[in-house]
Image (cartoon, rainbow, N blue to C red; front, side, top):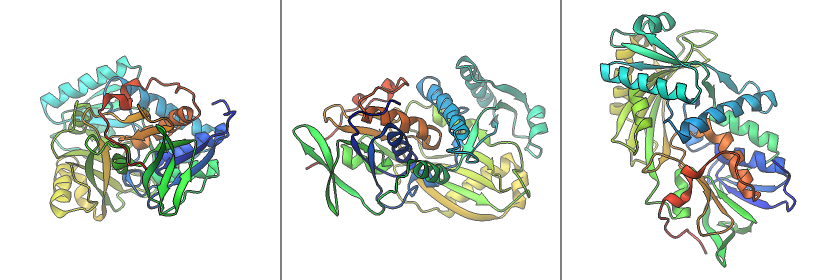
Length: 387
């Protein structure tokens, strides 16, 4: 990105992966950055994620294309030594348990191939050869070999270190400072902080600030971590992702609460198993009923998990929208305000790419990607929390 000649001061609200990436690219452009976080960095959805940098599950169109570009950007950041050792390529294995799900993963494979993504259709036996121990319920699979994995809080830490930006912790933003149709800063407990641009990237907490509370839908996801099944590496090559998870991602609008199974073999030899999809819930508690439902489904697919112990459960709150797409772009009526929120659970995958695009917007440049489908203009926005 070309260095900004005006060196704008940009306040970023939210120190998750999108906020951290925005800070990184803004500092590269020569802008001055103040990063505000209501709690601590990565304390929201970024820190409660599965780390998937995945094209396999994305809806065809904008999200699939952006995910492919985002994954390539991760690889570039590794080469640039910003994320060296923090991103790893590994395959995703979509699997089907019913004839209808076989059709679904076949359709997804066709859409991925049409987008230029390599895939490999697998029979039950071929999938079993790659992941021994699968149950008889698994009928077929689809391998997406170029996917990857990154741990959210590690990416945030690396980006902030590379940017030389220290977030102001425990600094919630209560209102936007507005004058003559322009956002000129933010209001915090410490007073007004002026800025040339304000970027709101605070996940589900963005709603009240932006007048989007009626648009942004909280979605709780519970996840499970087991003890080690293998020493010195992952138990099998990459995550198992159910066609049900795929169906939820391809849905035009958020659906009913459900379990969309992913069994993720971690580099530590543990398993990360998730997740629930609980619409409208904002608490971060796990419960026995939901955790048990996730485990029962996981055991039906991969009975070898019966040997493992659960060592941790946790939950995160994702922000979704009625059309299942993020909200990224300039505010339609208030100058100086840029929105980057509602990542739909894809924040780890898209975070660095979105941060680069938002940084360009903050420097009065257009993103290199076509983000028109994600524009805030598609929603009727309420009044912002301004003064």
